[in-house]
Image (cartoon, rainbow, N blue to C red; front, side, top):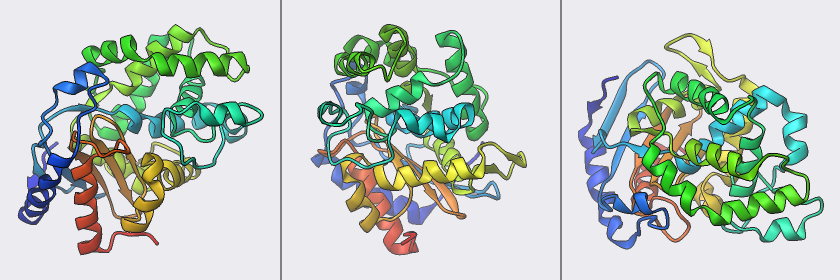
Length: 309
């Protein structure tokens, strides 16, 4: 998959890169702590197959929380809306993405939405299949189709690092199990979830996935509806309301596109009916979003009127 360099994008990347000195790397996952904080790249993927890019686009990174949107799409296709939303809510939260607080004060104890960790764990729990590997391969299959790359894999080193340090996510699992929201062995679920988060790609492939969401689940290259239109709409709505952690409201006002971030520094954007965006910038702000990536999207939105509002 080729992507041509763009001088205007390069100027935006150079301007946004200045923000990286104010960010921090997600070193609470030890392997992610090895990232270069001043890396920044972007790819914009259009429905006609054209792609423009700037920055270190060859750099690979793991999806982390961006995977939550795709696993939600898969589970909605597997289980249907009624069954999924019996176990996880649809409401934004002002709490951090890994908070347990709302679970303790909500009755029944179901997560508020699928984009926080508790909700994402419930969604991953609902991926159909007998074994962890089978369920993982079903998710990988969808991701490979959306990215148009059959070689996309899990970064095993990152997955192992996350598995060994994910004690808070285990606590969320045990709490949800106690309240019968989950009925799976916690270590099996953690194995699947950490591998899901460690699926690896570059910003070009991420931009193509964003393009499929932007086109309501339709892949213009293969002429296939990879995700039903109504499910793509639900996913994009969650991206607007909850996709940028507890900075989602500010992001909607300043930038105004469906987007999902991850603590590796990735951001996937889906500009409705226009194009997909893939960004990688591992220096994070205090909310866990790529600090230079946000600045880059602000520059794009201002200059090209991207906001859907």
